[in-house]
Image (cartoon, rainbow, N blue to C red; front, top):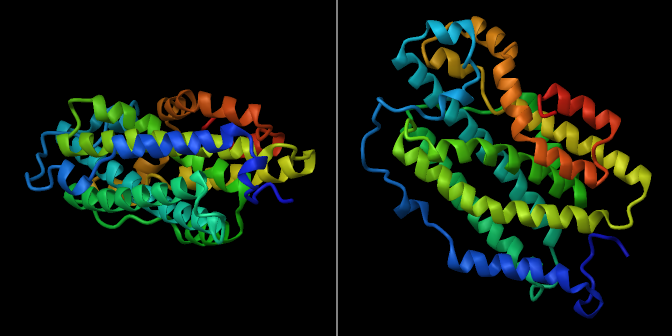
Length: 304
């Protein structure tokens, strides 16, 4: 029997149902409606940043030191909007993979019901991110064409542990950033609220993704782990390198070419990414998904 097939409940380990039940209980008690929780009416206050400045791709560079306070704030607003837009793109991939995973399975299963709950939350998050980016005064940032097409292939063919591990990587990277942003009083209040909502609800999604990754890998052989490790690493590289669209610099009034060059060489930002992902890398290693070829892509993405 395939590891992705739901077994009769009598044959399942109690833990397999318990995790999903606890997540359903949590969602019933602690869930948000961004339409009413976020202050959409107050005009954007440009005295605030869009994200913690330390998370800017230019923070610590010579170019950053030349910028005025107003330019720095506009840059972080554009970068936050780009991260939100990338989040929407991946959430749409996530929803399709999860729906395909539970298609025609037992609707009385707690994991089935949790999967639908997660999809509902992701739909609300995508709308929230879209409205947030619009309020930040940003255009519709999209990943480059190659990333879009690779995402189209990935959402169609990825299954089992490859799908859930990739979901986990994307969610964990966003989570670490947003935990900083939501506590930072320099960040515009409505963005802090958006980040708080996302962090609270995504913590459930990450728990499920970790549990499903472990469950699907139970009994997996070396070749299967090698293949999935490579697929997840490539997907992670594409997602992470698509977070900040190069157009943010021109839209913030900067020299795009110079900004891109300095951002690529920015050791501070690389260090922020690596330190924030240490726990994630430990999990992937424990799951046997941190192979040599996978490490190449994680290093290129500055995740390790």
